[in-house]
Image 1 (cartoon, rainbow, N blue to C red):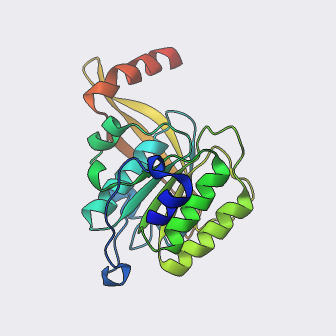
Image 2: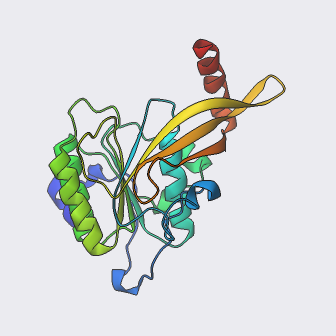
Image 3: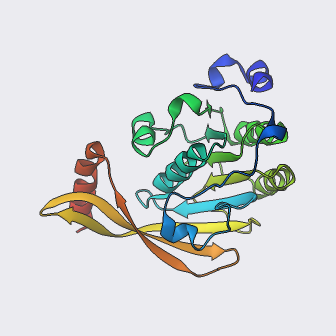
Amino acid sequence: LARIQQRWGVGVIRRGRVVVDPQLRGLVVRSSGFAALDALLAPRGAPDGLTLLRGAVGSGRTTLALRTAAATQAAGGAVAWIDASHTFDGVEAAARGVQLTSLPIVMPFDINEALETAGSIIAADAADLLILDCAGVRTSVRGDGLERLAARARRTGAAVIALVDSAEGVLSDLSLECSTVGWLRIGSDVVGRKMCVALRSGPRRDAQVLIDVLEPRSAREAIRNERIAAE
């Protein structure tokens, strides 16, 4: 992290933590935070290397990434978040269980800087799980850049979850596609969504799982408006 700050400035990391000697860490379980989805994944959850997380806006992909980050932190793992889309919401993250004081958040200038920063973190073995949020960025994500990042992650035993709009032709260890297929209600009040997660690559390709996601109170009105607009 010190090298990243020296190269791109202190302000690039919004929150940080001191990372202990990586050789002292055991194998950390990177659960998705949802038991039904974990049953389809590897024993450690997100595999070493690259996981692509795709879906439209409002599909639940960010929720899944946040829940995975929270579960990894709860298991004693180090997590870093690279916010290439500049859309990180600390309130939502805290509501999903993320420990913000232990989460370095890097805000790169562009996608190329995001990939360089991610490579530096992985090469330093400074994270068990790295979230790379590229959803909504104007510049397309380079497939070769993601694949080189995945190779580094496999060598260090880390997992990279990349939130992307499209990644055609990118070789990944796992690819998940999220979509909202229904709403959870108590009476007329919308309290959450029913999310479908489909495995597009990996050992159990084409398997699907339905997940009930309860939303924080602050998000319910937005979901209700979204549901009304859709209907």
